Image (cartoon, rainbow over all chains, first blue to last red; front, side, top):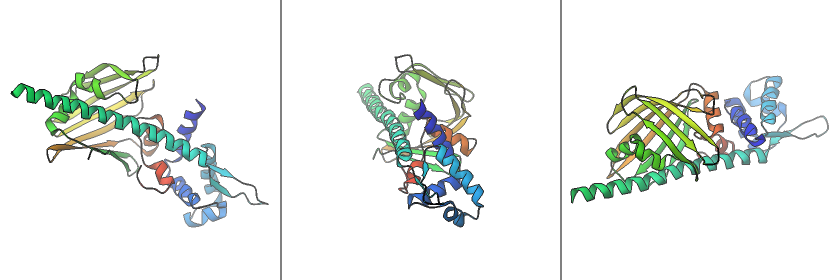
Length: 115
Length: 154
């Protein structure tokens, strides 16, 4: 159950374009709040707020380095989302594979009727 | 040739395409005949659809009930808005988990593609938050996770 709650939070977190951009930036490597704020023309508190959402969703973690707290991508969180999406995609593919079989048998039936 | 594509578009759309070896008329039929839907619209292995109501006429009702045979289950309700045999279907649907999700507005096109069919399903959700929730609860999926990995589409 905890897993699905986390996934809810993760997908909600990704609904925001700024948070997606922050993750894209962090995918390239660790960054501090100041470094993250620079390209966005946003205040550091605003960025911090977005980071908090991403941290709560398990997508970003922070490290303590002196007075700095650089953030990085939480691999586990991203991998959990990937696994989930892969499973869903497989379920959808499975549906259409089954539909392929249904269509093939319908075509066969039609050919049979014409005979 | 049968490969599925799935992508998010803008903030509120999800677009799925898939090719089929049968002509549009047959694919359309398989999407609107309850007996046929019960054979394929099942999701993960082990699930069945014991209840399938599909009134393929404008204003007609849709109701699908799925079960995993172990006490797990959920259902979907919807209404048809437009039907153009055998090329286009417009309907709305919502999942009940058990609370109803916001309406998903879906246009499905069946275009002749050689001797087969190219199906294009375009979903429109009320807002970005709803689309995110839909992706998380498992009805559909988007490109967000791969966006994060900078790999493009899933």
